[in-house]
Picture 1 (cartoon, helix red, strand yellow):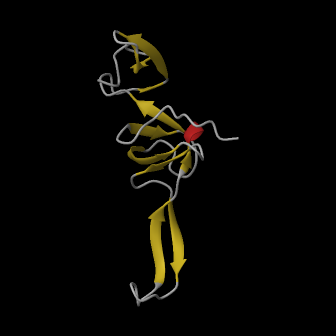
Picture 2 (picture 1 turned 45 degrees about the horizontal axis):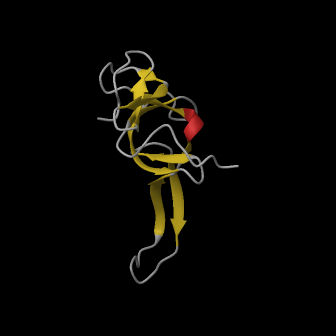
Length: 109
């Protein structure tokens, strides 16, 4: 039941709304719209057990970021610096642009 569209994009600053990193702010590293998830820099750190390979002869336990569900994050507006919902507005040329619901400024330039 993936939606295919997300309200955030790579490079956006976001606020985590729930989970072990609740209240923290970070930058979106990658968006996974097919799974409705996003990867945020330094958030949702998990430990992964890796077998020794030729590349990594040591093996051991690695720490890595795991994706968070898109419903658990909120975009931070670059102009007013507040967590906000977004609205889509059409500008000249028929292009749709994301805008802040609080201050009305365009998020996509």
